[in-house]
Image (tube, rainbow, N blue to C red; front, side):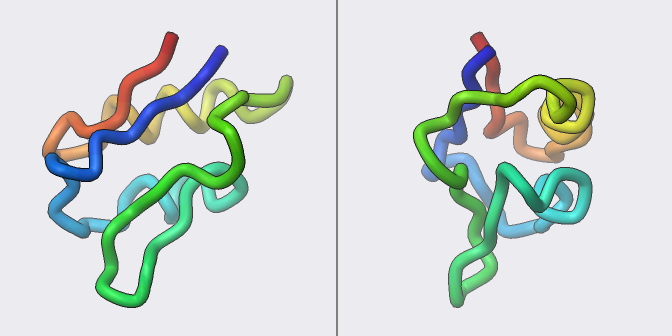
Length: 63
């Protein structure tokens, strides 16, 4: 699975980084980005999917 974050939709809630800090980080302004190349390793898939579901702006997608 691969995770994508649309930075134009991110409003800086930080929910994704709280749920899955191994895959999402916040910049100095509080906006999220994906750590690494977006490849989700085994064991963090559920957390990534939860982060996508709970993103208020629906900025996170997976494929």
